[in-house]
Length: 180
Image (cartoon, rainbow, N blue to C red; front, top):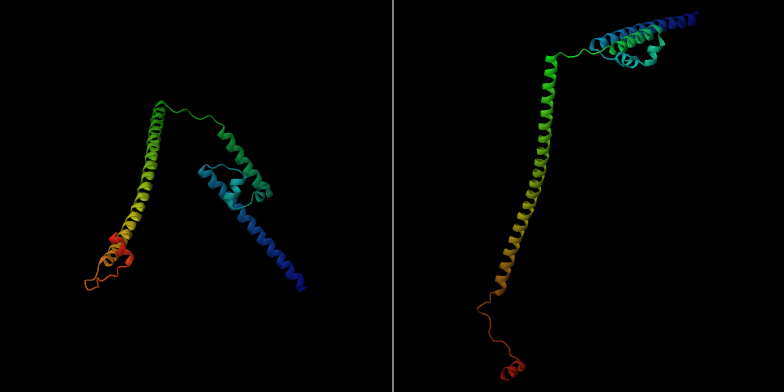
């Protein structure tokens, strides 16, 4: 008996939970439909399911939801087929002025984009030349150091001490050539 009681209790709890979930989902669907109608969004199974955070198949599962969404969708599509009212002459003047202004702004925007691209190219070239100048300056510094070192070595090699012996050995062969 005890097992049967717990089994029945579990079944009853599951039924209550399922009923609560169904009621919550239905409320979410109706609230989603209201929100979509307020903002004037398109109502169909996909948008309602997305807004209610449910699956599309869930909406098809319950006939009352299916009928409600289908009815709203058909009403919306029949309303969209109604003719659009023509603007008055003052509205058409405003519209034409705004279109002209948009056209002018698009031209200005295009010209500014072109100038911006040209300036970006110049900036790139300046950066490239600046890097090249820095490399050349470093090369100049290195060459100056080498020149100073070379000059100091050359001066040391050319210096002849005064105390050195000037007696050099002249060979017989050199003397013979000098005599001739």
